[in-house]
Length: 324
Ligand SMILES: [Zn+2]
Image 1 (cartoon, helix red, strand yellow):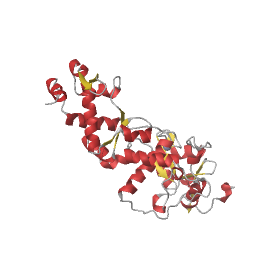
Image 2 (image 1 turned 90 degrees about the vertical axis):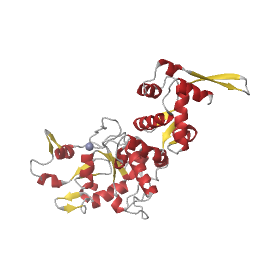
Image 3 (image 1 turned 120 degrees about the horizontal axis):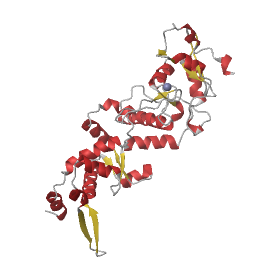
Image 4 (image 1 turned 90 degrees about the horizontal axis):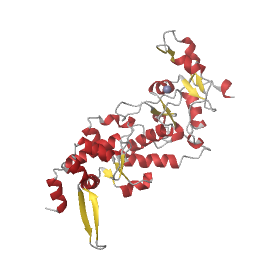
């Protein structure tokens, strides 16, 4: 038995497999990334609390002799155990190593991979179908988000259609790209609805309410670019998709005149009149700071012409009066 295993056994430290599972769960809660394990780090203590470690278990040192330099390195046994557990997860491709993650986040961190994320969701009894709204990004999705943010398409002559796009996206690559789009858009809008500013997440902090809407939708071969997207709360997402409102080139809202035909008990949320609030709004929607990722005029024009109800019972065709 090695010196390290002997110490682990003597101090009755938790088994590595259990530490691995605890790491996956905590990674899920911390947005998919945790720093290398060192003193003074919140999660190192939080995990120690979870395992109800005693003081001797928390403070035991391992002494390793560096033969080459003829010096002794002391490291905490608990930190060593956390490292071994993370290292074992990395070997199973459940997390990326700090040396890999640094390329994406510029920090030395362990990050959940898709495989690790699936496992973490299973451990926490969260259905895989909720992945789209998760605040946790996997290594693979983070890569796509970085790409979308770093190289937005040129603003001139932007074509919001992807002719090669398949409507039913079942390949792994397409599913990941779709998640990358959602994450990149909601992140760009700081998880707030662009119309009403609602920002809220689930009590366990895992799921954001806000969704990423395609301006030219998937079914019409809309591209998965941030400038063909907008972050909206569920209510505004629905109203945008069915054509109750659209966006003008100056990013103000235009509400369908169909609103005036609604019975008086429609669109009310207690004292809040949902449609009237939209109609009276003369302000710009909330936009990301960087103008190159704002909704593109070509995508917004398509929405006005094809989704928006410009006149009562008339979809899209007449919009010139307010476009000029
Ligand atoms: Zn909203």
